[in-house]
Image 1 (cartoon, chains in turn cyan, yellow):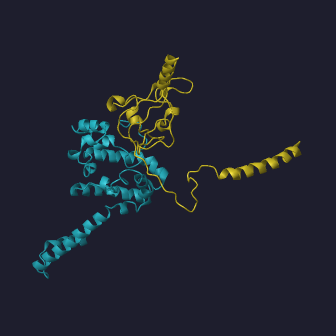
Image 2: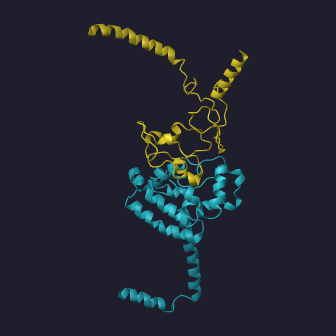
Length: 194
Length: 157
């Protein structure tokens, strides 16, 4: 306690040995390094490579993604894990990253370290993602799929009917219909529309 | 008695082996006779017809064809993606055709509340179509065509 009190007193006192210029400049340079480092780590943890460095992701969800149109398609444009699971906008990204510390907890306590455990938890995990996408109006989908530029005439009659009605008037959002497009679905009993 | 069967079995087995060896050359395989060390020329994967336009049935009992792409549709123990549109409860919203009432019937003819487990796997009978040529010539004739032909021939008589 005495120690903390001393530190508090020292911080409040004017510097004796260092000029205000050195302190300001030093703080500024340290700030650049800190901020740069922070962003570098943030971006490094925002890659598919990082996601599938854990076997939980590599052996389950990643394998399922590989068969879908978001992984392999005629034009070669593909979505990686963070494209759908992490918002692109900075504030929301930090929020998602903070929430993701729960995943570190899960890794340490091995909550989904086997296929059986993963499947047992699949519905719960899926529901988290559905809720998140429902709440942000499928923000991650819309990073690539822009409603304003959809050509309804190029869509199948079924798709164009649904996109021009329910989606257009905001009654429904992407995730309401497009569940399980990138991964296997869990037991869907009781889910609206199934 | 036991010895006798043994005596018959040996030549019979030999015959089977010899015939088997002869037949092996003629069996059509997926490799189409391409030697193991070589790679056969691959045919293009055809496009799935995705027009959403219902096609007529070629005969009354034909399972209706699927006029849309079904890539990535899960039909397993946990979920049946087809039923998210074609179920009785869903057609009002989806405007998709409802599964036929025969699908609610079990093998003893009792009607169940939900589709019968034996009709659960839709793509056992219902298939998508692809834009490709027929592999073999198709001589199938619709029942109406047959009736018409007969009517014409009777008129001639």
